[in-house]
Length: 245
Image 1: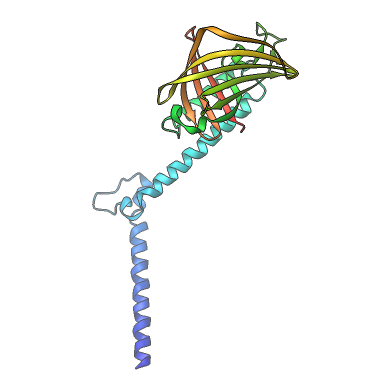
Image 2 (image 1 turned 135 degrees about the horizontal axis):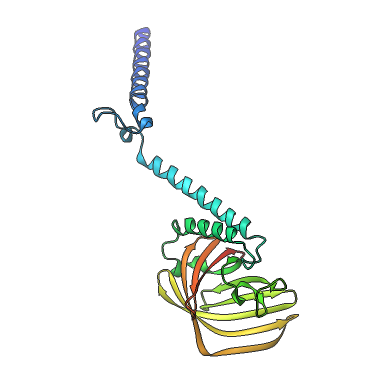
C-alpha cells in the first residue's frame, strides 16, 4: 500500500514538472517574436501576457535614474574649473545646457516651488550670469576678475534666503524674501546687501526701491537644483546648485 502511494506521489511530481516545463517553453520560445519587433501574427503568444508590464516600467525608471545621475556628474565635471561659469567656454556652456535640459525634462519633484527640499544651504556650481550673482567682486569681467564661492541659504520657516559670496576674508550677503507665484515659480524680493571683512560688517544698504526677480524652478531633488531667473532687464540666466547641508 505504501509503495503504491509513493508511486502516485512520484508520478504526480513528474507530471507537475512536465507541466511547468511545457509552460516555460511556451511562454518564452513562442514569444521569441518579441525580440524581433513584435512582428508575429495576432494569434501567437502575447509577450505582455507572460511578463508583467511593471517589470518594463521599473526597468525604464532605473534607466532614466542612471541617465540623470550621469547628467549631474557631467555638469559637476564640466563646471569645476569655470569659476561658477564665469569663464566657461562656449563648448562647456552648450554641454551643461544639454545636460540641464535632460534633467529638467525629468524633474522628480512635482511642485518644486512648494517643496521642503528647497530648505538648506546650496553651493552654486554654474550660472550664465556674468554679474555679482555669479560671485564676481568688481565691476567687470576680465583676466583679473575676482570670483568668490557662492552659497545660497534658504530658510523656509523665516521665508528668507541669503546669497553669500566669499573671497578670502571678504564676505558679501544679499538678503531676500519671496512670494509663491505658482507651483514652480517664486517672485523674489531683495531686502538688504551687506559686506563684512574678517567677520566685521562695514557696510549695509537697504533696498528703498523694491528690486524683484522671477525664479522658474525647473529641477529639484534632494541634492540638485536648477532654476532660471530673470530680473528687471528681462534677461534669463540659469543657476545650477548642489546641496551642502
